Image (cartoon, rainbow over all chains, first blue to last red; front, side, top):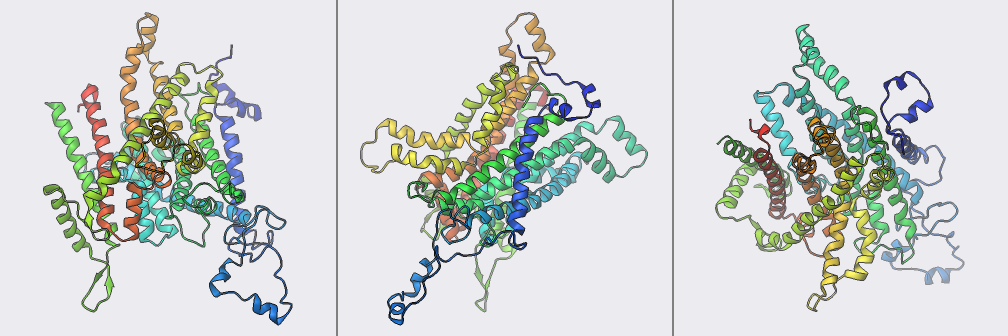
Length: 333
Length: 297
């Protein structure tokens, strides 16, 4: 019979690798952290490789032809080759993995390898931005509605939280994307505001349960300001385990929602790379996935990138929630 | 009497929330409409004129049931919306049903048999599926769906098996993807796992009395709360599934309306969606108040 895992506080005193793996959720944390490490390294490479001469193509470079363009051998031939102006856009070519393009190029003749990694950097940037906004707004709303209970400010804060929860998210985001001409900042700020409600609820709940405990009353008694009490004693010491998980899930939601929005054509705008847009282009739009026609290499890299990143974030969040949650230690992995 | 008053209060709050959401959508959509001033310059309408318009729209909608007129298609909005909405509703309800059907047994098994070897694979297994966004799963399954269940001729007699697959596969995708099942399994496991360690359950086990009745009674409300909280996500996912699988539906209507700068259609869609989300919350709250006497304060 399998031995039941129990949480043993005395194990904390030993430091070492074995101790780390014996504590709950460690396997998820390690696997998730490796995946997210890949994501971050890839994002940095995708952003800086071209500038640092590590990789010959930039994400917006257009490769015009598979082979070197043939020299115009004669005047007659150049006359025969002359095409109508509108045909020139078909001169560049998409092609499968070859030397110099490890993952091939897309419909517009751009290198897929560097585009996937550059997309990771877009999501890293957008995710950090969104998470910061949702943290700021969530902490403000939650602390106002929890700490100043029974006043007008509390009513307003909880009203805003409830209204933000009742939005059909995708409709709002599509409208905002359209109005802002697919501006990264506007979309991400909106998403951050919509994501803030979970954080606000967590903080309001924690404040509600801790409000009349001795240490908060004592902190009030010795004259600490409200900002210190909320910021240090409630948010930092008593909410950080819950907030860290919310940060990870918020980050995952940025990738999921942005990819979905770009798939239906309402994501961030062009010079920035979006995995959802790449999948849309590579899978033949709304029509069946184009494995059959043989351009499998276009859509698969971003698909794999999304799966790896989202799985990694989920595993990391789950492992952290197990590591922090002392009450519920029975479940391994 | 106390229960009735609490329920009335909930409904009042819900109405206020509904006003908040629709007014924000109205403000956003105001940016879509251009007005021409005396010199013919295009400007966006001012806040006050938008607020006045909003008042008109609300009073029309409440008194006459008139949601406005679509200039682009030259039809009433309620007509356009009603056409596509039934499908969305089937998708959402069906997908919630599917995810409950998968998640609750898995969660209960994971909580009750927490030491069994297969339980260790339940949670990572659900992640594998539910880590995928809806559209990814959908585009991988769509060719198969088109080949086996796609309906080419609506006037021909369609066999029932084909019809079930035609709606069933999108419903299953919507029920599984987007982290729904993974999150539900986790919550159900926490709820049941917390319950079976309560003293009264342990006492009942010690007395060899029936436990399942108590577990069902106490776990029902939190699980229902989780289902209603998934409702808004399911609505969002239904739009994507409709966009990928079906040629008609509320999402295609919404995207077309955005393209043709047709604000009233979008406004009506947004309003119906937030109405549904709020209604789900009200049902949840009312049920909680009616069942659980501790919440009547």
